[in-house]
Length: 395
Figure (cartoon, rainbow, N blue to C red):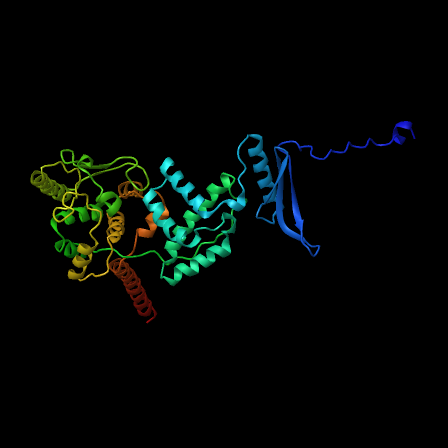
């Protein structure tokens, strides 16, 4: 054994009281309870300006806790403020999400606010770290008591998860909780036969007839696309109806060529708007403004009452305006329009939605049965002839 191996190990110098730890160092630890047991939640300990900053990660998962520690150390090294997770509330995350949607244009802020409103009523004041699967289950129970459909709750869940993912990306959340969705009811299956639509149309005012004709023909969304039309979108000379990129739900532009009846209906509607402009002595850019009443000249955003009345008088009470969109898809399929072209006309982006709207009516089922009956009767007749021939030969 050489002398070097016998040399005593150097004793590390003791750190004098009051000496500051190096900025940007940190560690993970678990707290010991009074009874001597170890609490499962991991805590971080960071040294900032020589002072220890302790905070719970809110997780019992070591790997997730290490991610929180790395994020905090990275922020310290960049001179950024370290977010105290226990101070982050739902309200702050909701505002972050609204700002994100507004600045990126990735979603209609009004639609986002609609989904946030019930979430805010329940989760306002909650710490972000407290929002987990169990908390959302309590939210679901509250919403279901009020008769809210599972599909609506799932849309609200999507907004909540987007909010939490954004918080995770920005270091305001330690981990993304598992929040499961609900089973939704089967898609609505309402659609119009031609005579049913004609009956409803007869009971609508002339301007709303033109609006419904667009939805019935091309499957455009009533409130966000048809009623939002302005004169600049209509070119009667070339017979085109155009929505520019960013003006549709999927943000993609869309252009269709008007059918002769639809061209006539839109020309008549624009004449009505011209008359209203002369009456009010001002320019009206909208194709479907209110023609009378206290909102005269303003953009029409809905006509629920007129629609319900027309459906009731036509004997099809309870039908939805969205049924016009479903009907347009089915009519395009029946007319053998190529699927890609049909999807461009209606504005669908995924086949799953397109297939869901291609609904089979009772008339379709009856026609299929009649074709099967014809095939089977031919087979039966042929078998009978063959049987009689065999009997004759044997005799």
